[in-house]
Amino acid sequence: MNRQTIIGLGNWVSVPITVLALAFGFLVEAEAQRSQPQVQAFTITILSTMVVGDTNGIGEWGFAALIDVNGHKILVDTGAHPDTVIKNAHDLHVDLSGVQELILTHNHWDHVSGVLTLRRELMKENPDALSVIHVSDGIFSRRPSESGDRNQMIALRKEYEGTGGRFVVHSSSAELIPGVWFTGPVPRIYPEHNWTSSGKVLTASGLMEDNIPEDSSIVLNSSKGLVIITGCGHAGIVNIAAYAEKHFGNRPIYGIVGGLHLFASTDEVVDWTASKLREFRTANLLAAHCTGVEATFRLREDLGLSRQTAVIATVGSSFSLASGIEVGPLAK
Ligand SMILES: [Zn+2]
Ligand SMILES: [Zn+2]
Image (cartoon, rainbow, N blue to C red; front, top):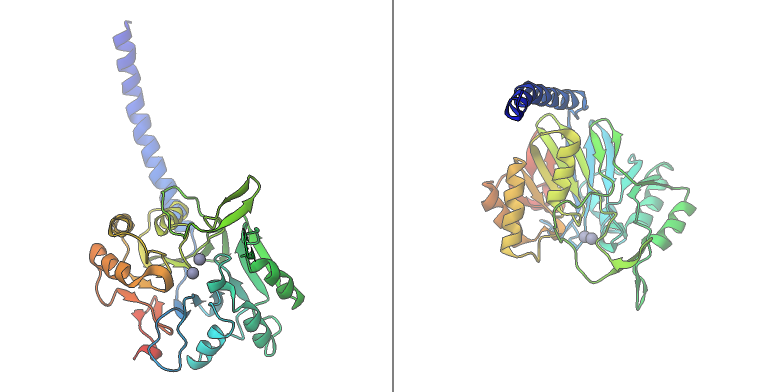
């Protein structure tokens, strides 16, 4: 048998093996999708962002949202001022006293400043209210600056734990309840730069540019597709979407809710972001906080979305499986 024949035989053998491997891969992925639990109903309500539609609401540079999955409620972030979320929730008739868990997406002040006010106020009605906070590794890292440490989380940790509260620190992703996935630190496979390059963070390798390594998001696995909730999206919304796709398989993105930190990005960056989000078949965008007005309109155009499906979030606006995006009582 000459060399040509051997190579030829190898090719004949490899074709069915390749076909089998591909078929097996599809089966594994299909099985993975089938075995992932889905949420049957959800509503996400914005409790802190810049825009309000009524004199009762407080707008601020900040973010907070309440996730309600089949009646199980989880608060995400707590706004920039100590009392914004408690006041907005009151005005919106949103009862937070039954909410036991809080997720802090990252250490920034515009997401964590309401923690102690909320915990102390809500404890009066329910000692378990906000008694557990999910965070990612790195949120307590020192952020030294000339005016002292910029990381409020270091002091906040002691005070919060003093109330009997407990932090759960995640170094990787975790399913918090069936169909609700906390990303933990997000792999940065695309070179998105959605943060301000002014801070430093102390890591095991020394003082580094602070790219907010702990930045985490939440992903709901709904019957219509994935729903991503971001605080500031410092990890990059495309990185977050790619990580969610890796976990859940090739499912469309039914919605993105929260801050994407594109307010200062160039048109080219926004266009690139949109081109990738198109690949993920993004159907809705409730753009809050640091997404930016211009970036939101550009994303709407680029993604082929409409005034109903790509909307600037207001305090009280919501996104649900049943109704999609709704502007909420404060914006009417
Ligand atoms: Zn931030
Ligand atoms: Zn922010």
